Image (cartoon, helix red, strand yellow):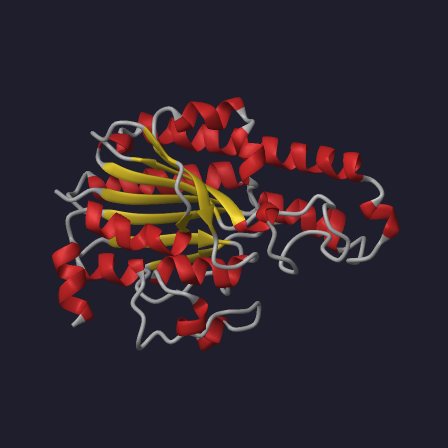
Length: 279
């Protein structure tokens, strides 16, 4: 039986915060980690369309906040489609319908970022995937943790503009705000990984823990959060591959997040199928 694929995407997760986190270090020592992974774009829509397709948005059509529907789905196949064609059950739970391409997904779920308990919701989805696995059904599950984004939206984007003196003069306050939001992401991730282990999905699943982009805490006037500039704090992301049977290793060379999906397809021993579809 092929491996399942679980992607846990921490929206707005900063690499430097993960790098100094004892919890993320505990993930790192048990994974193949990338300390120089660079996102295609400093915002979710273009970044994740690039990840799902393995191609830059300049080629796929999705290269801005507003270009989701310009994605050339007739020319660029997504990870969801590849796996769906191999009889995987494919499911995604996301914050809105714009952030990833929907083709190839059996379930395209939208959570309410203001109300839903993402830990409970995502645990339930893992339980559902386990039930399918028990019937010899492979699955691909993509879970977006959006609460960092939600906190930044409510407390920064709706309060300040890109030149608000009050915001940029209070770097310590901004960092404490992000500390709180990032810590909640750690709590979520710890619970989800525990659930995965309880269900024994860690034994037959490839798990990718990643961020789509980082977030400013006031480093540069003109960008109060993300999407405006292309500095390390938004372009540099974290990535941890939990691969059954593969020894932990840190990859220090610079890599592109658009290479994650082709690499995963190759690792999951379906590269011949990928080559077949590409000709």
